[in-house]
Amino acid sequence: MGNSQHERKLKILKSAKRIVVKVGSGVLTGEKYTDVDEGVVSEIARQVAKLVKGGCRVAVVSSGSVVLGSKKLGLRRHGLSIPEKQASAA
Image 1 (cartoon, rainbow, N blue to C red):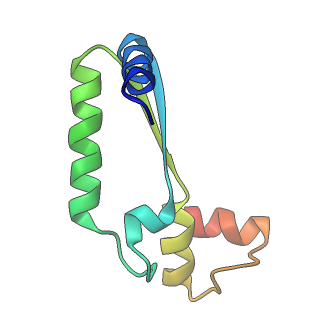
Image 2: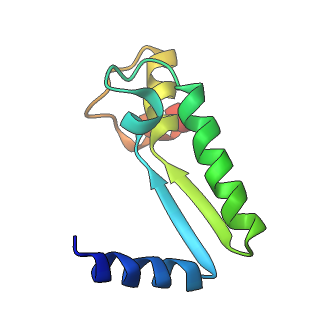
Image 3: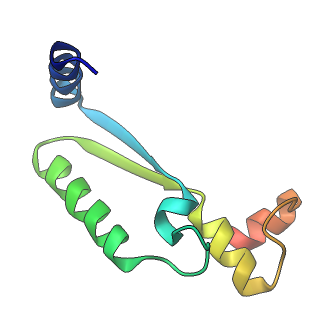
């Protein structure tokens, strides 16, 4: 990415009032989808706090709850029904 394109994206981001951050389950759990990486969660929280302190409204969304919940319930990782996903996320 060129420097001017990067600067333009930074300018847009800095002017944003609301930001939605989508964090994939692989980011939260690592490649093995076993447990939450607390260091990653702490870093995300730190960055979100900085954005909030700067006046942004931030929403963090993730599919991590389904992955971790399905593991805890002893369900397979793929091909879950909607009720199974809902139970896993709860």
